[in-house]
Image (tube, rainbow, N blue to C red):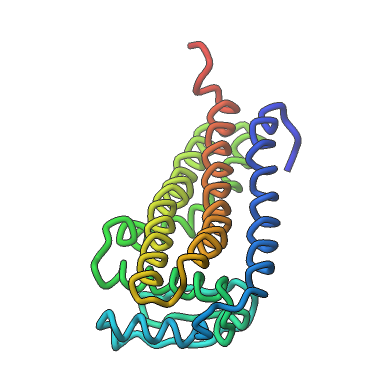
Amino acid sequence: MFWDPTMIILIPALILAGWAQVKVQSTFSKYSKVASSRRITGAELAATLLRRGGLHAVRVERIPGNLTDHYDPRSKVLRLSDSVYDNNSVAALGVAAHEVGHAFQHETKYLPLGIRNAIVPVASFASSASFPLILIGLLFGFPDLAVIGVFIFTAVVAFQLITLPVEFNASSRAVALLQSGGHITSQEVPLVKKVLGAAALTYVAAALVSFLNLVRFLLILGVFGDE
């Protein structure tokens, strides 16, 4: 909330995060206008991949919004946004296949996904509790309280870091599923990879922002200073 010299550390990460958001939106918008050669929609693709993979219990549903696509492992529902559900573009197929990749991760008990799902409640609490504790501790002279806040914040950093292999793996699975099933041509593979790569960049940026915030807090508390 207040400027201090350590905030300079965050500037590169914040620039990357802003650029990543623009990049994913522009890339998805660009390739949403490129119809796939197979003319299959995102919802049809997801249903086909799930059925062929034996995941008959997973439902495919529409969810409002843009790029709000996600897989819910608790209810076994794969939700596709309006721009993906009934769109037959290469961008829609890439996003739909990516979410199917998460469904397969859940089915095969992919370890990083299990770890991420396990720490979701802790990370959610940490994201809301850590900053107030740190701020109150620093402003009112309670360094121990600030240290507790920083310690709690490490859960947020851990969550962001474990998210990276989960998302990268889901994208790799997506491309493999699309290629092996003949759902995209060899010319469309690089286009799908551009869409998924732009999305992955947002997770890299988020992880970097969290990590550098942790470094900043440690500097403020003098952890790296001389005894």
